[in-house]
Amino acid sequence: MRPALVGVCVAVVAVGACRERESVYGPTELRDADFASAEGETTIAFAGDIMTWDTARSAIESNSVRYPFEATAAITRSADLAIGNLEGPVAVHAQPLEKGGYSYKVPPHTLEGLVWAGFDAVSLGNNHVRDCGDDGLIETMQYVEAAGLQHFGAGLNVEAARQPKIIEVGGLRVALVAFLTQETYLMEYAELNVPGLFDGRKQLILSVAGATNDRGGTVVSPTATDVQKMVAEARAVADFVIVYPHWGVRYHRPVFENQQELAHAAIDAGADLIVGHHAHLWQPTEVYKGVPIIYGIGNFAFGSRNSRATGGLLVRAVLTGGKLRRVELYPTFTKNRSRQVAHQTKILKGRSARRVLEDLAEWSAPRGAVVRIADGVGIIDL
Image (cartoon, rainbow, N blue to C red; front, side, top):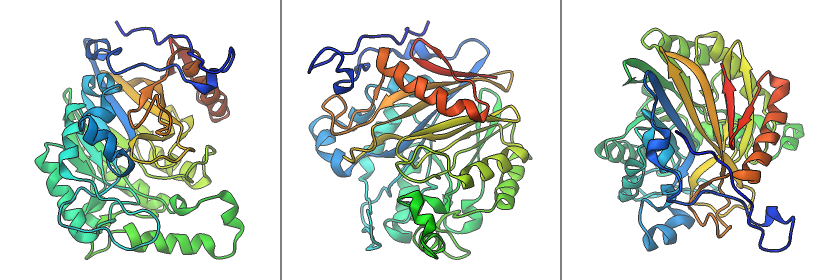
């Protein structure tokens, strides 16, 4: 039986100063057996942005490649299928491009950490997919495959990038669909009021990350019609269709209108579940036509010390009889500057978990999603 996610906030400054120090589960407190699929269930775990290098390098070299995942692995390792967003090229020879902003390059041996943590598939459909150019994308796919992981969301041309990945899980054919949207290059909503800026950002992200007929990358800025076509093609060959997009405005909680439009289009075309990422923090949930949309799950194991990336969600979808019955939302603490995290994401518990989940429930209620809170877990029953 899963442990009750309860606990008492440890305040280090004064009584009532719980926000100074979160209540979290340590690396040895959660057990794989507590999250094992019950008889007749199929479980799928979703983690957000993963980039285990850059500012995480020192922590990994001082500990191990398993270190970023040690406090959360019980959930991902116990799932029948575990999925994450691999946000950075995995390469040895290819070099980061001079493109403005951050360019990442992650050494291949770090993939051992993802495998140990139970990940089965990673999306490459994000804005860092071409940080090391064509050679970097080729190396990434080769190293990911050599590690025993499956990948989706990118390819050596646009036709390959848009293809769903089909994985058999518990007798089900599960399809994974991914893409990248243009608002990911906005820094603030106010930029929408700057004439021509949004169109300029769209062209920039196309040039930086987009796949074409003769260049590798991901699907960038799809229209609702594009998304419906991708989902319909996946629906034709799968029993359960998951859309896993990289979207939203970074560090912004509100759902961007483009996210909702594409989410609804995907569901209209047959998607069974939508789980998004990119904003580096959690975004609200929605239920549309009986299908849950988890708009943003934030960072998971990301080598950055940005103080705004404070928390996300680790998601666990539970299916019985091939149908989605509930979605479990585990609030996470991801602020790497905190000594409690220090590049090792933690699951919140007790008052810390409840505070986040109450906020999530409040943000989600207007969108038709009822988030029930039980023992520090947010649950959407279907």
